[in-house]
Length: 231
Image (cartoon, rainbow, N blue to C red; front, top):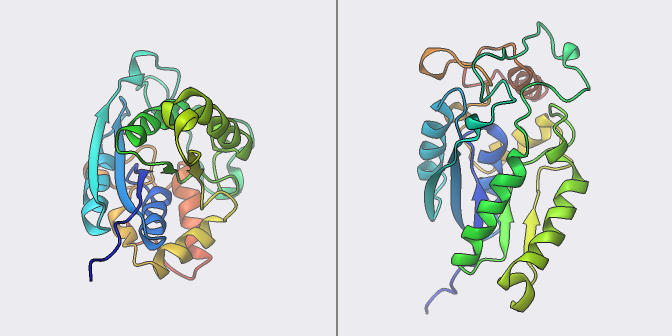
């Protein structure tokens, strides 16, 4: 008996902890997960190496890296080497204001390209690992943004206007703490030693241990009584 064909989904895969968990969740929900990563002028490309490794180990149906140079605009510590990445000694020092590591309109751009990809493979499902709890305060990780983008996607595409099903943006990590995300990923077999979350890694992709992303990640592992395997 022939098994039914899986529904296709596009999964944004950065190479970090959250996106790796998101890919594992898409797989667990029965989707054929087509991963998409971006070379956007970020200050390092170690995360893309991790994304390629994760796509293989987590069994993505396909993986592509799209080139788009947001460094032409700058305005972020992640795309402009002249802007330093903030470092702290403890997670309690992570501020509530939008930090300089915010890349202007990054998730809007990424989701737009993922949407175009989804249309070409006749998929109505896009997964993105945004989180609104243990995160750096980026405005394009909030529920209001995701809701607005999904509305726009269904107004601005042929698939949204003429398709039998509405386009849906899946955000399975949105309301989870970092500790809950890690626990979920471990239950799904994610090898977090393959992931890189650091905003300013050293040679070979060694995490700095002091940027917002490292501190929030370390907190999540500590709350699971674990040491970050990337260390």
